[in-house]
Image (cartoon, rainbow, N blue to C red; front, top):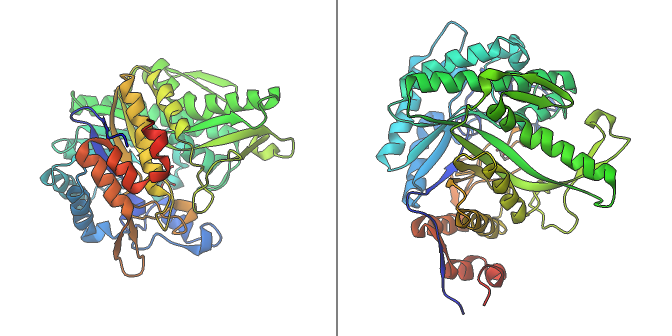
Length: 442
Ligand code: BGC
């Protein structure tokens, strides 16, 4: 049997990603805590509750777990509603809590990447109309100035906004996230203001920290036509790609925001990315369906023959990941994989998914595409938004009642990858023998 190792460049970042509301627990002042209190919003009536109790201090043990298993980076997010509980109040203790966390990463030899906005908004911002309000970019800039000034000693890599496309589509088109609207005009307004908010934050960060590296985390989905022979489906897949995947980063490159047949000049957004963050999970097939008027006639399904995750949320399509990196490369910027993972409570598919997807990153790196790091979603099971605790993305499982962490085999797999800075054939033989021949053909 062939024995070989697929190496990554020296200095490659290997980490996991988390977000404040999903891991901290005890958040009570943002749009999601309010949403969870409403009946019927979250599967099985779940609530974030204590989550992984990071606000209670359990980040320390989880950072230990990450560091002990050879990760050298971590992506986390700041909870705006804690730092600025009211428009005229800054909570210095909350800022200090994040300072301790970032110091904690450094002490463990891990490079931090910090997200400023990951789906949650302070309730006072929601009351002002959230991101539909044209004043919100300025409020976001104020928040950015405050936190970056306070934390710049400990962080250089900033993600301004996580998945503006998912935030908008889920909240303003598909009614799955707050405020559960189905309103294309609102989608346009929210995305436009997120472009403006990003641009303002980008400049604010660079004023405070000229050598900072600033970008977004974009959710990239590989869209294909359900029926390749149907021009409608082909056009639709292209339309969704352009609007969901490309519209936002294009605006940050060109200063022109084009979305759903509308276009607007936002010159302040031109050239406001130092890197592009890609969150990739899956591929979806698009079909034109006259019955789906509320969904812009879009009917999405997973590829017919794909292997599906635990709860049917993700199709395991590693080639779609390669496509995502190829897309990202078109922007001529350094690329970080800011999220990639799968919900898999019993951890039988994750070891293979992980190896298959990291293998795609290796392929991309070998074309000299500038991929600088990979952050797996996620370190520990955490609160999965409208899906509550029904989906488990953690390398470590979580017993929500006892806070016990459950070490999955995937911890060993990822540790082996991080330690080796690559994929060795022996790892594949041990953890994912069914793909051995595919990865290491004789
Ligand atoms: C989000 C995460 C989420 C993950 C898995 C991504 O779209 O950024 O917050 O937990 O998907 O559902």
